[in-house]
Amino acid sequence: MQSFPKEIIHKKQKHLYRLNSLGIRNLDEKSYIHVPAEDEEFVDNLLKNNHIPDPIVVINAGSKSHLKRWTADSFAELADRLIKECGVSIIFIGLDADKDIVASVMKKMTHPAHNFVNKTNIRQLAGLLKKVKLLITNDSAPLHLDARRREGAGNIRSYGSKKIRPDRRIRYGYK
Image 1 (cartoon, rainbow, N blue to C red):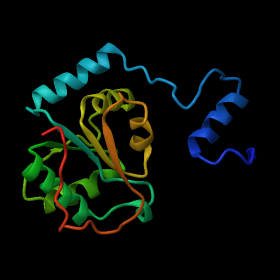
Image 2: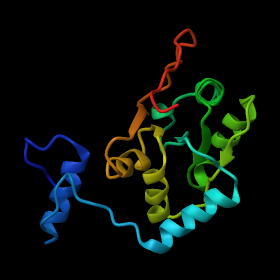
Image 3: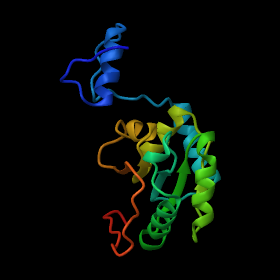
Image 4: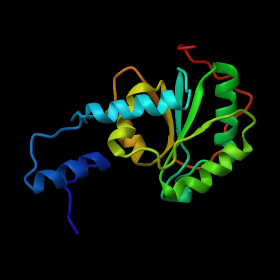
């Protein structure tokens, strides 16, 4: 197993250290992820063909570890509130392993949302994240990919299964 210098504490620093040890240099924490034009076009068509208007919020309800996953009830409640209170379109993303949790969340919702599980590759997902106002995610790959998208957009990340507080009103400045 590879050992890391003690000053390296974040996973992305460890990944950059590994790449550097393989001879892949000139990368830093602000490295840019290029999204080819054909992937941008794919995303534009996917949004257009599914009639998804702005503003868009993407939710990733999956995670490799169920211990790092927020509850389906919490995701459903938050998604419904965002639709009702902020007028957003909700898109769920994920891989095949996430299809059951996404189906569970969407079944619990009272408002319609869009299921994009298995509909994008990693470059297309990066292109989608560039177009949205907000990503809500568990600790997972989309969280780290989202760190590379355009400035000025936000994300909310969950590192566990705590229940959201329904007495808090959601307010965002982009409505």
